[in-house]
Length: 349
Image (cartoon, rainbow, N blue to C red):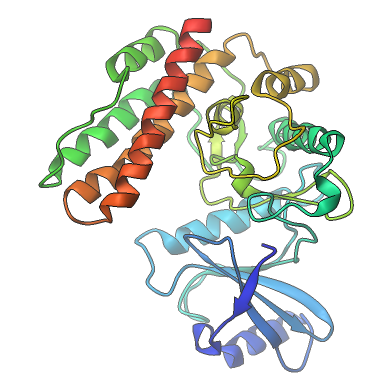
């Protein structure tokens, strides 16, 4: 959230927001320095100041999706549940579940003092030793999330952990099959597709201990402190649910840039001088977590399978004339890289 740009005040009704904040005794007087923060791709992040205090407002985009308001309610709920935990996250200030105030559900959180590593690394974070520590902190935050007792923090009913792993392959296969409804899509030209799906079904872990899943854990969804290597906050909680927390470790295995700098995900961090490799990260999680990682390869392969299928959707829409072909081809190449990585994990397991 480090980069920003001015925002048209009409994006949010400031008079109604002020009245809402007045009722909750969240400062007084005018709202000033309203700025849209870069980094929110699906939802809006608006930073402003009131009575000397910084606030960040998160709300759906102007043209909401069908589930936009419920996404805001769920995000606010999980951030509130994490209050007081060891998980680095934006601190929730207040939430509005109803749509009447601003035309959408929204919430306020504290501004995070930190930077997004995919935007720019400050000079102090170029040193190999600092980058190694950043990688360790990236894992430590995920360990802390996996240790939270979701029932104790009030997240009962936040997800459906029963049969969670059994649902994964059929769900994403059905997602891929749905692309055939797009007129012009030539079908999934994806290597190892059937092989990986079959391997996942045959090697699925038999049990797990439910916990909180972030659902989109990669370097594009975290912020690091400006003054040291520690992770400042995990952000973008829109896919959070209750299930098997090792799903997030699998995402690290799928999305983290490999030793040869092939990134299978959105992370573009420069310079890349001392960050740990995937095995180092998984071993760190294994050392610190109480969870059983004996089948961790399964989670890495699932993350490659799931993420690749999601990205293939843009390629399908591009072939159907509903998205830019250049962008569709780029994401298709990423899908291919993900499935190749999944096949490599299977070969090593």
